Image 1: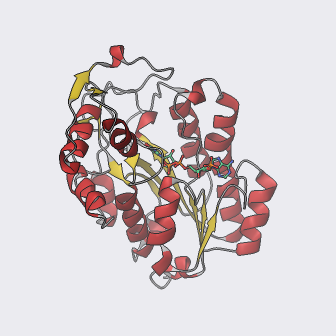
Image 2 (image 1 turned 30 degrees about the vertical axis):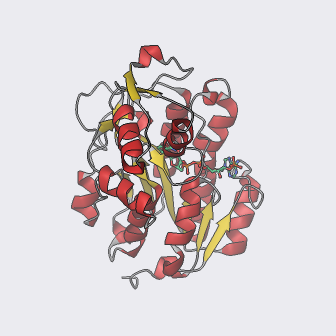
Length: 291
Ligand SMILES: NC(=O)c1ccc[n+]([C@@H]2O[C@H](COP(=O)([O-])OP(=O)(O)OC[C@H]3O[C@@H](n4cnc5c(N)ncnc54)[C@H](OP(=O)(O)O)[C@@H]3O)[C@@H](O)[C@H]2O)c1
């Protein structure tokens, strides 16, 4: 058996390192081994040759794919580029991992589900994405899981951080301009980039990680609506702004979204003993500046 953490000590190559999750991973994974933080300028993940050459040059023990095409609405009209980055690039990274005996950590989304289950989704539940983004992410999962490598595909939901383009920073910005009208009939779980990065680190440090690869749900615990999340943000920040609930029908978007996409984190807890905090606790940590 390999020494605990030996794989990460060979080096951790983070692709998409300048995105909201990539930035936090770069900080949180640093104690595990030398981190190579790669932005789009260092390696375009849609370029198979560049991916292969970058991995061969760095020879990391772990490849972390934090890159993605995440513009959910724009993807409806940019299927080709979304497909390249979300469906094909994960396969390029997985091939590079196979060629160099590296592990791969890849992230996916709650939007692989259609939201009709009526309860938290488990890994074995059938996928049925409602939009192009979710469909391309589903194909990316399959591409990684089909390769004979140690891979962790972590589905997460409603990701945010203090900075970057996300719901948290949008609410903060718009709250300064006047009352907010927020969709109250879509339910899911806000997940801080810090909570997900910490869980990623815990996976890589797990003594039996080499035998525990696979597909896992890795989102914060609990559930709320976008309205509930907005309410919690302005309340915690003490912003004197009114938040009014609206329906999805009142806020039409190019991409359809699931009405309920809570992810059940039971498998990650059962197989690896890892549980993310409640979304309220993770939000409090972000607001206190601890995450
Ligand atoms: N955001 C969410 O609510 C959410 C929810 C569920 C799951 N996820 C998943 O979580 C993961 C991290 O998402 P995130 O929110 O951190 O995304 P993000 O902030 O949009 O970051 C994605 C990063 O990927 C980079 N990228 C895009 N195309 C690239 C290319 N061809 N080559 C190299 N880099 C490229 C982007 O660079 P540029 O800035 O230069 O484009 C950006 O830095 C993704 O797998 C996403 O699907 C996100």
